[in-house]
Image (cartoon, rainbow, N blue to C red; front, side, top):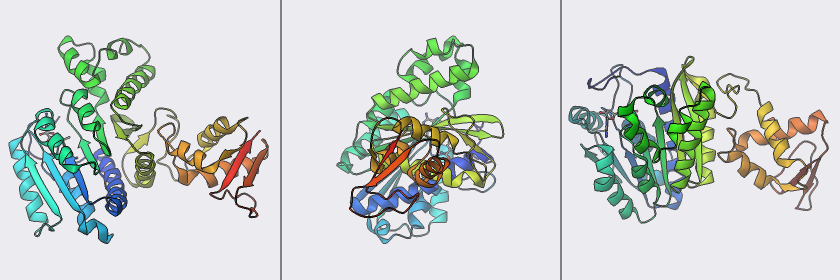
Length: 367
Ligand SMILES: C[S@@+](CC[C@H](N)C(=O)[O-])C[C@H]1O[C@@H](n2cnc3c(N)ncnc32)[C@H](O)[C@@H]1O
């Protein structure tokens, strides 16, 4: 683990995480700058800003998402960045890198660098910045090296502010490795904000144990005001690197993060998998949408007519790994075309329906 080096080489799963971050932030800054006049981005474990192999670190990814954004409102919205790292050399490297890459920081952007631990910075810098936002949106990246620097109570405090989203890397292998070592007990109690992880860590079956520990973490994030918690695992080859948990108070956030994952997955030397459908490989060119069809059938079967709006929101939610862009062509149309179940579609606007289409005003019934 590169805890002492100032720079380290980038690996495939980090590239995957950054690609998702960039695509998501393009949507986040673009959509929110239309509605709000201030936005806050916090990188709680900012790192040195670049990798030994020259790639941008997450702070530069987030800065470029704004500077290179094509939507004019993004350039006129007040955007504040807070970059935190407890390692002085890395933070200084980041600062130099930011000013070397971006000659003229645009006047709508403010950047603060704080050499602190994330935990201390939460009370000293993050919460005061959130208070100053007066309800405007905030995105916080939490990307530590291990599991003992991200106490749940700090995340809970941050998430108690409206329109706050967190993107957390959870080093599952650390949890798994250290769960039986007494010296890590208090770190894991802090990470989960409870002691329940101890009973789940006794589960013999590896996959079942992971599922329960992830479920616990997701539930804890939900208790902390997150309405949606989208989780996926990042793999390098067949090796699980970490779980990414994205917690948001808005269904649009879960839709956009899933769109970002689906958009970037075929692009690199990394893989995303979900805990609900481990067989679902979204990295291949032709993903298998049978799990989506099964989800739709069990959601709709024998419920009478359900609006397409409700169906799209359900698929966008953290109950599935799919998003609304998949529902019609890869879900409803395939089910109806197969003809095994009776699918009825009626429009609420008094207009005709073309076969195998599902306009936004329609109601759907599966029997
Ligand atoms: C995984 S790296 C961050 C990489 C960066 N987010 C990126 O994607 O380019 C973790 C960083 O957190 C810093 N760090 C470690 N413990 C910390 C703590 N308790 N609080 C804040 N930063 C910490 C390390 O110095 C390191 O630079």
